[in-house]
Length: 355
Image (cartoon, rainbow, N blue to C red; front, side):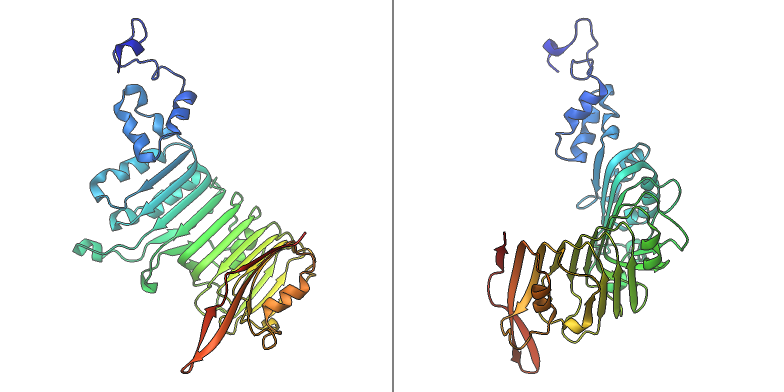
């Protein structure tokens, strides 16, 4: 450090910046691009050695790194302090084996959001090949502070999916406001019971989730405001949603041609519907028990042959949502190739803003 920056009579490593209050140093570190860069500031002086541990948001990843890179020690050190946000992205089996322990500790230390992504890994050693599916336990203890959790296994093969064990009723998570489950298999408790027991839950995202409650999935929560459902897999036949405060409903991958999924919604305060692939779903398979005049934003898909598909959900939503201010429509057509129907996007999605 330049001698001109040293305080009079100060030690060689007591520069002006290092002598600033902790809040100011943390503000400086907040401009550092990555957590890895923030960790490197430990080498500046003794004063900086532990400053990074007090950052409100930390993100760790072992992608492109060796298991001996010291990631374990950094995460353990971080989990000894409180944070607002913690993101962990793991690929190597050695780190994945510790993922559940880190998750349980993080639930007691992170007050904002925990994001855990487990990525597919090509085994290189016998030890790697012996590493089976990663099993996580969704934190639901009285010490849990986390308000939002996101899990994504990011794995293509079904038999290698990460497993998330849900707590068995009557376990209650009193702090959870958001839950995201992506490409993961559920075990243990019943998802319907867990959702209804989360008294503060406001947002629920289910994308490519296996092992739900058998053929029926019931989502009932008094405070839930946003529901995002995409491709619930493993034999789902009936979806029931009863959420008196739900404002946003996003659905993808339900009711593909040939499926038998039935859906029923009791959502009297619904303001937004995002259902872009509604073109082939008969209205007879979907039942909205409340009036649709509260809907202000609507995204639907339609077949170009309107006269043939008037009974499908997209056309029914257009007729029923009479208070829409923002309308987004995708036009599709179908044609027979051999014995298979092929869907083609005919036009760029049409956007209508109605005042």
